[in-house]
Length: 231
Image: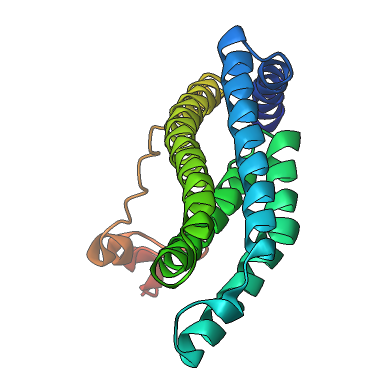
């Protein structure tokens, strides 16, 4: 009979094999979802490249603003360009490589949130102190980045919910298989004792008075007539 550990190992191996088979054979809905994701990433990458080019063409030093505002805008412009040309493309590539990887998706989404906040502030400053053309160019790219960010967030929410459902199902299968693999309890042993359990009767001692009245078997007795001398 197979041991409990062996049956459990076989059950877990079967589940892992089934999960691997399902992951390597994506359904049609997953393929369609990935296609929509890739289109969103394409728009995002294009908007990021264009936004970087628009920022590079700006003459922030000629904006109608005080020196402190110009200096802060120059700092924001540098941060935006580094993100748009270095960090963002790497994160986008990671999601393209592993569309179902939640970690890669959340890293990109978190970066987009930070990028959107800084780009929004920078675009508003450009509209307030720079030429209208600077604002119009950035506003268009900002809108595209915001749309891509929202679509990615919706996808991550749906993907997380689906992953949780699959995880709950997998846990339920593991519990079911573990319960089925539990060996039956060993049979109870019944001990039959055929030996005579009756108690032997205890030997009763005679009373002391009776023992003293008994004649001594080792000595002879004489009658009173034997001790009388003949006259």
